[in-house]
Length: 290
Length: 152
Image 1 (spheres, rainbow over the protein chains, first blue to last red):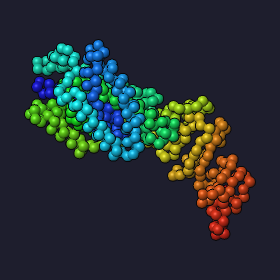
Image 2: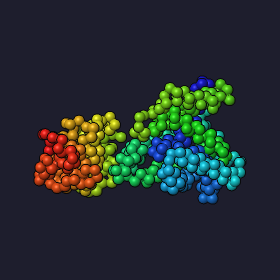
Image 3: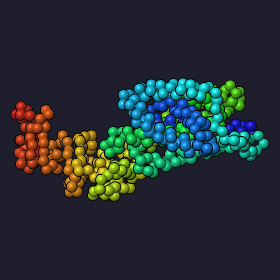
Image 4: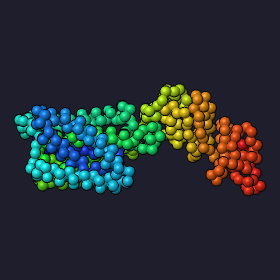
């Protein structure tokens, strides 16, 4: 029963990792940009939720209604300006630019909001949980986040496979030049992909703020987990990212159960094992986003 | 991406015109039953045909075909070339760049022969003699030593 609980908690935290990672996966799969500021973007979303929504007389639980549209727009604009400029130079520049962005964001947040931890206030929902068996507690918040992660991945998958714009995104991801020959404006398509990625990162940031405290520097460690989830699942496969996130979550919970110090170590070991034995990831394919 | 998705991408920004995805399936009759297959699993000639189909569904005024026969089996080349009159009949102009002189002359209404970046021969293929074509293609200096039979 103890181990079952470990498994359940691993799956729950894995849902969060997947939600966090799918934007990263999308940015890399389509734009071939590794967004090192991904974690910090999530933290910014958390701050926007905490500090903007009270002004709008909206309960913080519903803050995503405001933050997600803002981030969708920010994603498009940032892609069409800064990120596209760096893509036009070379892949290495995108790493430097997003890294720089990450440093700037962290320090701006420290300057404005100090290093104090913040949470997205969801009232007493935070303490409520479902109690199906003796020692198994399923937090409603974590369950909700897992549900949102699955829903987001489902919608993304549906969008990419069924809509014309989604097909263009995959076409650009597969072969940019061939897609351009077919009349696709790849910069605009990149912008759409970036705005999708930013919408998901906004949700992830708010979810993080509901589950635990965040501070200006919380982005880095979450970015690491998101990376691991993407690589374990296989780059370019959205459902792979979910499986990767859950695998990472389970490994961490098992590690933590043996010794709390082993939590992150266990996740990293799983990551290294997958890299060594199956470098394309569990669901990795020859081509991206197929 | 699947074969059908490739055509759908081509059709996304399409103008109005004679070519629809259905029409492409009529033109290349092997495509419809295999529409769900992933394109990277197709042979080189089939991929070439998909690329042509994808270009056609956009209803272009002008279709550019660069080195159509490069790397393809002769039977596939013949099959693709046999479609060109049909495409032209729909009002699409086609510009073909081709090394295979006989193949090029057979489908073309007008021919430009380029030698070292300059037009060495231009006009209607029916008016050319084989010697003219040969000289234009290989350059005057080579004609004396080359004798090509069964061509053009």
